[in-house]
Image (cartoon, rainbow, N blue to C red; front, side, top):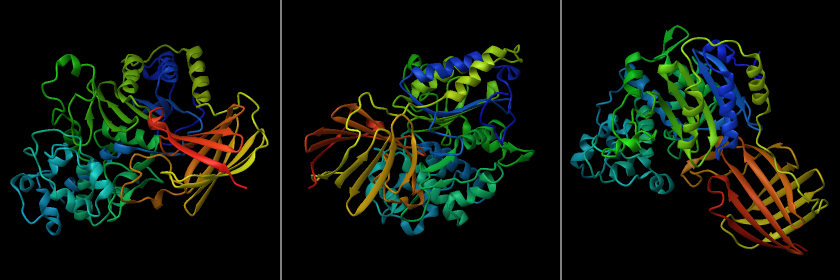
Length: 496
């Protein structure tokens, strides 16, 4: 039987039995490994059965993964439950929920802004206020409502993650619960989704448009629920009419763009209620750096993907090139050779750890005082032998110790927050700590030591390169999502 990891939620099937070529899935994996995209996990469902699933070591089935904007589709789902329970409607005016947070003067466009305008990213604000509000505001609702609205709500698309936060705040207002708690008995419990968490801001509201962490199988469950029009285990969790409303075309992201350009883009097929339309009559939940739930009704298929990529379209192109044509209406002849090759490939998926290309200083034991820097690192300590390295960062008054291995990943935990797009948002990040980390190191040359810290419940990795020159240390700190474009330089002198 295929697959080292069994699925608790779905039956397992050989691909050919569900009309899918094992060799084509194998070709997809080969293409993924050759691509510029770093895949972390994927799960492929056809006819409600798992036909292939894999995790690139050190990522693993039991780990959650930060979803970024893939979280938005769960906020849309919370709104759907609230609508079905008649707690609100999509035509309700946004100002009606926040009488105590309104500006002194309510302009016409703000007065007519509706829940539907938030759902379809057509608030009419320009530019997108998300970064400014998240990083500087102490009251996201009040400051969002105080912003000018330039265009008639509902008339112009502009991706606006703070609009999704407003939906989260509305759900909390009408239910008296954070949306993660509201969704628990309605969505998470019926789908046997456990261990999820969702970031909250300083007002105690789930961030809505980002910040949810789930396992890959949980993403597949969500996709299958939507493929089944809200039905799960014989029970209609969400009304079919809501599923159809939430996942069909509502607004054109790029009116006037030539059809030839639209034909090559999955970001120009129309936006729904916090879901995107795709080519090939599919739709998706979509998060930064390649977190995807892809639902393909015509093929009765679901794909869940986690990754880190700077080119999300390229990642989707691999799905359309290799997996879409691999699906056939009827079962295919058994292909034991292809199945065994696929099983071998799935079992061997991995992201290579660092290892040493030279011996370097294998008995290093040094502490370096670091000049003033934007990361507030005071000192760096290293103690290594030929197989392990203890790496200590003293940041302000905190000390963070990492144990790394050469030639393999070393599991650990830390309270130091890793690379993150919302790192400076006004949030309570304590619910995310401690962070799971896998570390490796290697000597690049006799004077250069590289350390890699992979934050495995996020898409991101931190790369620290240490350049030794006698008693001097120069270091570069790089984050994987801007790798090669930004380096934070550190300079140190050996402590006496």
